[in-house]
Length: 120
Image (cartoon, rainbow, N blue to C red; front, side, top):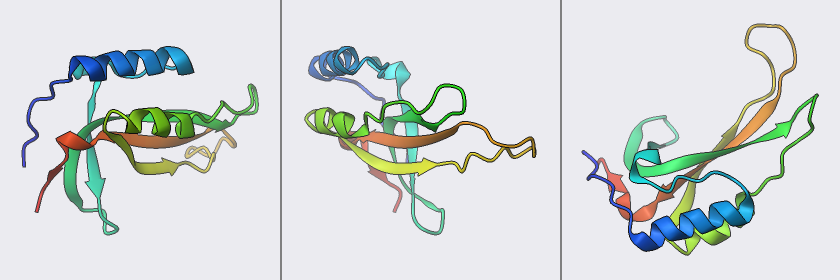
C-alpha cells in the first residue's frame, strides 16, 4: 500500500519547532524531513508503514560518556500532537570489523499515527 503525501498542519510544525527548542535537539519540522518507517512483525515482515523519524542517542562512549536520554520527554510532548514510539532498538557496541569497542546507541522510531497504513 502506498502512503499518501505527508502534509503537516501548522499546529504540528509549530509544536515540533517548540519541542526542539525546549529539549535542545533537532526534530523534523517540514514534510521533507520525515522518513518512511516500516513496522515489522516478529518474523521481520512489513505489516504497515507510516511517516516518522528516528531519535538516536549515545548510551555509552569512551571519550564523552553517554548522552542524556530524552525519550520520555519526547514521548510526553509528541503524544499531544499524534506521535507514538513504534520501535526501539540498539547495538551492542562491538565493532563489526573486529577493532574492538565503539560507542553504542539506542534508537526510537516515532511515527505520526494519522499516516499509518496497514499492508494487509
